[in-house]
Amino acid sequence: MKSKPFGALFGLLALVAILGVAPAFGQTANEIDIATGAGGSANAACVAANNCFAPNPLTVAPGTTVTWKNTDTAMHVVCSGKPTDDECGKVFEEDSLKPGKTFQFTFADAGTYDYFCSVHPWMTGQVIVAAGATTSTTPMQNMTTTDNAAVPEFGPVASIVLAIAVMSMVVFAAKTRGIPKF
Image (cartoon, rainbow, N blue to C red; front, side, top):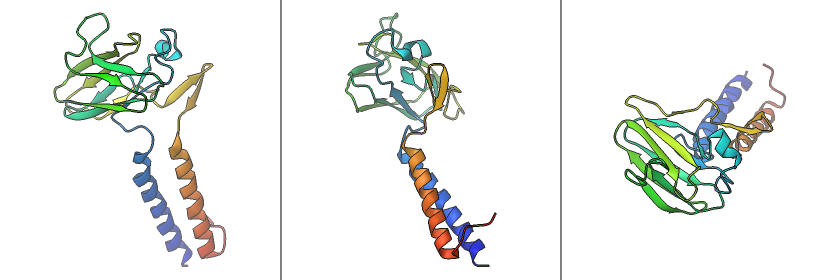
C-alpha cells in the first residue's frame, strides 16, 4: 500500500519540477525572437510567413515589459513605427541589437505598436497592448513551417521534461520494486 503515496508524491514532485524549470528555458511569454536568417534578404522565408519577429503579433496588457531577443547572426535595429512612415524610434528604439543580446521596452499605454528593423526594413512586427489582455499570440506561434509541414518547436524543455519523467519512474520503480500499475 506504500506504492500509491510514493507514486503520488513523485508525480507531484515531477509536475512541480517541470513547472519550476520550464520558464527558465526557451521563449518567455513576453519575448519576441528575431528569426535566424531574417536579415539575410527580403526573400528570407520569415518574410513570407510574417514571422521574422516571432511571435507576431504579440498581445499584452498595459504595463507589460516586452523583450526582443536577437537569435540571428546579424545585428538588428528594433524601431517603433513602419518602414514607410519615416518615424523610426518615436516610441522606442534599440539601435544596436547584436546577436545574442536583448532589448526591453515597457508598454504603459493601450494601443497598437508597429515596429521594424531599420537595417532590414522587410522585417516588421506588431505589439498590441489591450486593457485586460493576457499575453497571446497568433495560433501558429510555436510552429515552424518547413516544406509546408508544421513541426512543433519544443526546444530544450522537451529533454528536461523527459529526463524528469524518466528519473521519477526510476525512483518510483526502485522504491516499489516494480513497474507501476495504473
